[in-house]
Structures are given as C-alpha cells and as structure tokens.
Length: 346
Image (cartoon, rainbow, N blue to C red; front, side):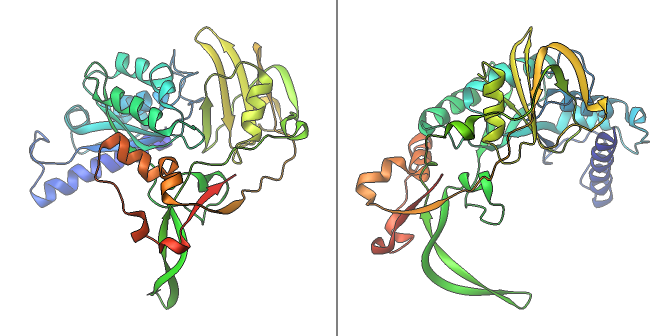
C-alpha cells in the first residue's frame, strides 16, 4: 500500500504540475504524454488478489489500479480526478528476462481479462540465455502486432553492457567496450576514457559439474512468502531440483519455491531468504522450497578473436537488424578491424 500511495501521489503531482503550466485541462486529454509505472516480472505475495498469487506483475497492477480508483484506500487525498486520468492516459508496463513463449500464459492472458482499455508494454525485454535470439524476438514482435491482445510493444534491453553491475547483468548489452581508446571525458574533475564499441555475442554455455548442480536446503510441504525487492518467475520447471538449479544459476537468487498448482507448475526465485521465524514459511502440501547451495559465481570475459564474415550471424545487433529490418551496422567502423573482438560471457 505504501508503494501504491507513492505512485498515486506522483501521478497526482504530474497532473497538478500540468494544470499549473496551463497544459492539462479538465479532461486530461489532448497532446499530452501517457504515463506508466513499470513493475518487475515478479509475483506479488502481499497483494492478496484472488487468481494472481502465481502470476507475475498482475497483482501489482491490479493493486495500483484499485488505488487510482479510490486513493483513500491507501490513505491519500487526491487533488485531481485520478481515476479519469488513469482511464485516459495510463499504460501499464513491466520488465522481464523471460522468453516470448512465457508472456501469454504467465501474463498476457490474465492481463487481457482484467485490463480491457489499458494497454501494456515491456520496458526492458531480453532473454540472453536463449540461443535462438532472432526466433524469440520474432515471436514477441508478432505478439505485439496482434490486435487481439493488449501488448502494445517492447523495448530491447539494453544498448551497452553494464560493467558496473557485474554478474548476470553483463549478459544483456548489445555492445561492449573495445580496446581502442577514442578520447577522454572529464566529469566533476574526474577523467574517464572513451572506448570504441564492439558487438556482443550471446553468452557462452558450459556444462556444470554435479557439485554445481546439487541443491542446498530443501523443505517439502513448505512455500516461502517473502517481501523482497527482487523476485523472478520461471517457466517450464518440471521438478523442485530444477527450480533449485535455476536459483543456483541466478546470482541474485537467495531462495526459491516450487509449487504444483491448478494453473500448472510454478517456480519463483527470491532475492532474500525467509525470516528465521515461521512468518516467512507457510505449509502447503504441493510445494517445495529451499536455498541454493554455497556458490562462488564468477563471470568470465573471454576475448575471442573472430572475423565479421564468420560470426556476424551470432551478433546481437545483427539479430535485431534481421528482426526489425533495419539498415544494419558497419562493425569495422566501431573498432578497427584488426582489433575487433567479439566478447562472450560465461
């Protein structure tokens, strides 16, 4: 409710600022931008909305809509007609690393049922572990073009590798930094190097050892209820061991819950462990929960010498060019051809 109150207040503030600038108007229409709140693709365990406990993002969106319709339900007194503005200018959005095949069964089918008239888009979309990037992007593009659902589109994530984040975040960028320094830039008295860009290949796969695949603590008949800033729903996970493995392979995952519900198999990864007391654990016969085994995840950066001719089909920018039918990129213009390396992450 505190998050919803903050978002409702922010929405009201934008409308009030528009009125002050003389651009709003009573009907909140005209040439004004739409407004969104972007949610993670996580299950809301505290929303308590029937039918949404096993589905990511839906519970959060329904809770926010309720707060927009009745701001007093979250302890806020609005200055503007938020419900009218919500119905005319609001779009939902979420970020996900799930493949396109997950979007309809895990989200869109339920969203279309509850949110007719309110479009939704994916603010960050990329499934880096999918070896068939072009096929996955074609599928999500076709879903976006299909007028029978409310998905308005998606934004591919992301332009450049986030070296500052490390871990699994290194897998998402289309471009990495090459070895040729172009110039320097000074910000607040600190000098930074400006490097040429080099295109990225998909992550390298390796066979994990039996020790790496082994699971840590497993509690049968228990489901975790954890209030965490990060969680992630995984699809096509047939067994509790498989859910534990997904947690092990995800650096941010600190605990997991697997459940066989009426809607199918559910595997949820959490960014925190349950509380020591019984508050974070509920008895449920169909569920298995646990912790990943001790691990030391290291992400290796390999500079692999290659030629554009041999490996161009593997490059992420090339995949996007094929799917969206753009003009393409002269990769030798990014870094000198003799120095060009296609970086891969394992």
